Image (cartoon, rainbow, N blue to C red; front, side, top):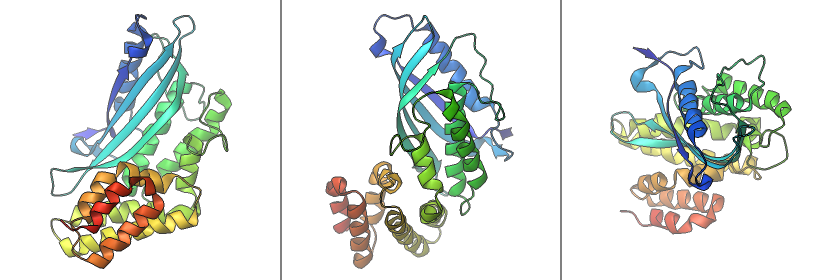
Amino acid sequence: MVAQELNAKVVINTTQLGNTNTEACEAFREKAQDFLNNKQWTNVKYNEVERIECTFNITINKYSSQDGNFECTLLLNSSRPIWGASYTSPLYNTRDAHFNFKFDPADQLEYNPDNLDNQLVALLAYYAHILIGIDMDTFAPMGGTNVLQTAEDIVNKAQNLGYSGWTAFSESNNRFALLNDYMDGSMEPMRQLYYKYHREGLDQLCDSTEKAQTALVESIQLLEQARQAHSMSTVPQLFTEYKKEELVNIFSNHPVEEERLKVYDILFAINPSQDNSWEKIKKQK
C-alpha cells in the first residue's frame, strides 16, 4: 500500500483559554492533521510502515472568535525506527513560540507553492518539508536536499505574510535561522552526521556491532566539526538536547575508554549545561 510521508498527530492544549468556546480550536486540529497526513508532499513513494511518526503539540495561548486569530506555541517532535530493533530514535525536536495564524472553521487548507498566501498553510508545509528532509538525510548522505530546498523556498515566500519567525536575523533560533544554519555549506558535517549516526550507526548495531560503534563515534566527531565551522549556530546543541538520553545510553556502553572520553569532551564543549548526563559516559556500564 502506497501512503503519504507523514503519520502526524496534532494535539491541542486549550487550558489557557478558560471558558472560551473551543469548537474552532477543534476544527483547526482536525483540518491541520488531515492536511499533514493526506497530502503527498514529495514524489517519493512511502509504504505505510515507512511513514514518519511525528507529533505537533500546540498550546493555544490566545484565540479571538471575532477575527479568528490564534497565538500558539508549538512543540514538534519526530522519530525514526531503527533497523532490526523495536526501538525508535528521536529525530527532530523544536519549539516554535511564534506559531501564530488566522483560521476559520470554513477554511480549506490548500498548499500552492506558487501562491503561498496563507500563514497556517505556510507553517504546516514548512514543518512537513523539514521533517521529511531530515528523515531523508538519515537514509542517504544529504538525501533530503531537494525537500529542504523547498522548505527554504517556503521561508522566502512566507516573509511577505507579515508574521514573526520567518525573517532573517530577528532571532537565532527562528524558522529562518535554524534551516539556514542546517543548509549552510559550512555545516555539511552536520548533515553527514545524520546519515552516519542513524544508517551506519544505529541501524547496524545488531548486525555489525563493531563497525556501528565506530560509525557512532565518527558521527560525534562530525558534530564537533559542525560546531567549529559555525560556532554561533544552535543546531549542534539542539541535537544534543533531544538526543541526550540516547547518547548517554549508547556511549556509556561503548567499550573503548579513550573514545568514550573523547565523546564526553565533545558533548561537554557543545552543551556544558547537560554535564550531569555526559558524566555518565565516563563510567562504562
